[in-house]
Length: 307
Image 1 (cartoon, helix red, strand yellow):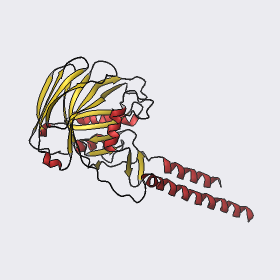
Image 2 (tube, helix red, strand yellow):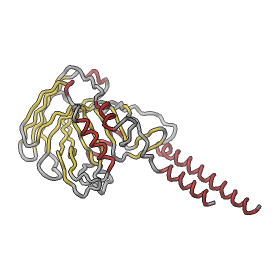
Image 3 (cartoon, helix red, strand yellow):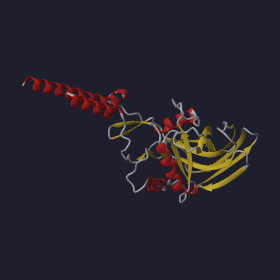
Image 4 (tube, one colour):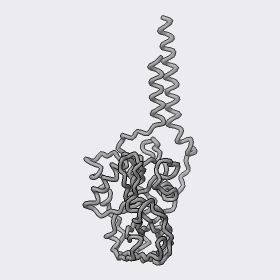
């Protein structure tokens, strides 16, 4: 009987606990591309002109100060950056998050809205806990386990996937008007027809170069590339906008980044069951199996005693 209870307990744990050791493959997303990455220190007037083909790959990392596996992912991308042009943006988990003060709920919500709260692989659902990485808005990698020789090797392959944006240019300038405000100007030369029905949005991402949080339990101490705020500038290919900067967590090391997002229209599927029912099916099936095994174990023990 005792073995029966142990087996049922293992099945119940399997039903509700994600298998974190599985190397989940990177998946291709259909939501639209994220590109740009030109930037300026917030307290400096600056401008730049870049060919679209020369823009860095945009890497968004969902992270947290308590997440040890996140350090593995972040270090891997740092190694990638030594040989490949990338721009990192670290989104600290802030929704229902009591342990990490570096995040912004609005920034965290935008990551969830774009990339989803639950990641599904082979009928198993994994809550969107860090680490998770999005590359150019078109590739998504959950977790820190890889089938490659190293995580750095996998990320190197992923960030070098060409975006093929065409032969246009992006112009960016930033002019501070006070310690907390400034004006962004942009001009994007691109063929929008390549995005079909996608809608282009121009944004200013405000990033803290490094935030010190010694209480973080993953031992990092200084947390780089922290996205403190995202400000929508408009949907026009050219324009100017005056923005107010969010506060830095500490220090005076904010920077302003020009990021373009293309959002494709969402095609609604007609599911056979509600989302809640679909998520409950794997666990319900395992619990039902466990119940059958428990009854069988009880009957077997009873038969043994009666012999």
